[in-house]
Image 1 (cartoon, rainbow, N blue to C red):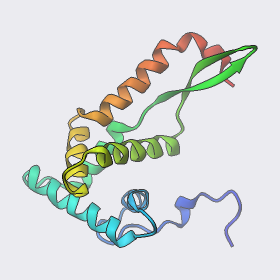
Image 2: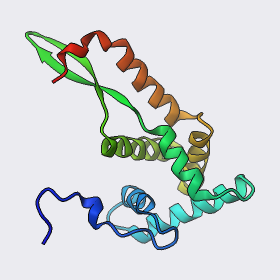
Image 3: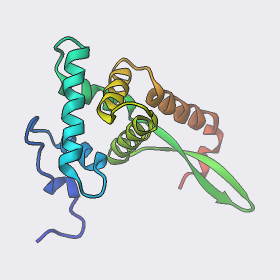
Length: 157
């Protein structure tokens, strides 16, 4: 029986095709209404498109590097002190970094209309792999906000 403080990652099975827990976790984030097979199809089609567009590069390596490029190191949180609210820069824990990277990637890919999701996701992953695109801009903006508010760091809890 799992203990209360066990991480859900501990019980996550690796993806059948790439044998990666990160891919399995991403597919779960991509999934809508419990339709895991549809999410898998979108992800695998995306990986095939990456292979075609990079002329044979390992798609799993592209995916892992893109996620690592998107992960934010710091973010700002609101902290109320007295009557004022301050934006306080906080280091982001590893699990939240991954969660934010997935969320931003999916949000931006879903926002691109007019093409299949696999194509949008492949384009955004390739741009993130090359350190460009909307997800990298979002990460840079988060870092800039934290840097601009570093004078409030002493309010950190």
